Image (cartoon, rainbow, N blue to C red):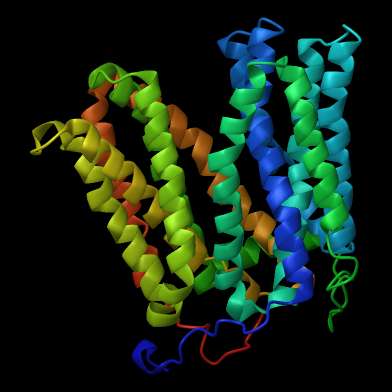
Amino acid sequence: MNPAEAPALPIPRKTPAAFRRFLASNAFESIADNSVRTLLPVIAVSALGAGTAEIGVLNALGLGAFLVFGLPIGGLVDRLPKLGVMRAADLVRAVAVLAVPGLFLLDALALWQVLLAAALLGIADVFFTSATGAWLPTVVGTEELGIAYARLQRVSTLASVGSPAVATTLLKVLAAPLVLALAGIGYLFSALLLPRFAGDDPAPDSDPRPRFWSSIAQGISLAVHHPALRALLLSNMLLNAAVMLGNSVLAVYVISSLGYSVAAFAMIGTLSALGGLLASIIAPRLLGRWGIGRLKIAASLGCVPAVGVLALAQHLPGPVLGWVAAQSLIWSCMLVLATVAGAGVVPQLCAPSKLATVMAAHRFFTLGVMPVASLAGGLAAVHLGITPILWTWAALAGLSALPILLSPLRSWHLGPEPHGTNT
């Protein structure tokens, strides 16, 4: 089927009740996540005197959990009820977060306890994310995953815009550990609002279930060797590497090189969130019109001029800050569109009983490249300057379209042809 002949991506007339409950749950989970990311470093620095090394460890614990525990947790989640895993992960995160203000009130809070809470939050997040990725296709269907993820992205973006502002306001009247209690309450509401039953049981498999570590090896093999999955893996690795290169130099470029204030940089971050919100609104219509393959290619290529504007901002007519703001909004929009476009690929190619394992293998590579790219970008900027890193950022983002162009994914509209050939 040619993309031009393919039917438009169907917009469900009635969202499943289980997904509506999950959207409400996701709103509280996103608010809690954003509050934790904002407040834990503040607590470590302002209340416990942490330095840059300790903050580096604190920020690395979440990503480290996906790298160290992602594969075994993915294999384990495939054997467990998905909603039960999500609810347990929410409750663990609530306890870990609420322990911090509790210890603060007892005058017993120490830095190692904050680091332990961050580690527990990271591991619980791996469980929650793995279970969510395996559960959603059973509720909304694999062909409508793009729409579902666009709606979830919209909720998360709204939380990312509002949560830091609320937390900052409360910090003026309360100590940071006490404000963190609101995040713990958010996780509790997330657990309460999760659906009771819907795709909650491990999916049956016609083949005998392999041993635990064999199933993980099979998940890695499928993610690496299947032509479409390998293309998605390489594309996402390049795009994530581009993201981290950008993150490694953006603040220094805007504040030190261009001479703008911290407040101006914070404003740019707000525009970035608004770009993501815009993308989550238009993504379903674009998916219906262009299809998975063409949207992902177009979004990846659209990242190139977005970053190019940033590199050329000082040479373009008009205020430099205006170009920097435009870059932030357009880059975030393109990034979310590329992410949403690829969201339904893995579930359409994997048996439900193997989905969490394969997605964990996919995340192992796509997240694993991020700290490497961040370190490489920071070191390269010291020796080469920031401008070459900006152009490398743009090039890597554009190159993320190439694996899709050279794979079967380039012609996908709703899914693979012939449809239903899962591995």
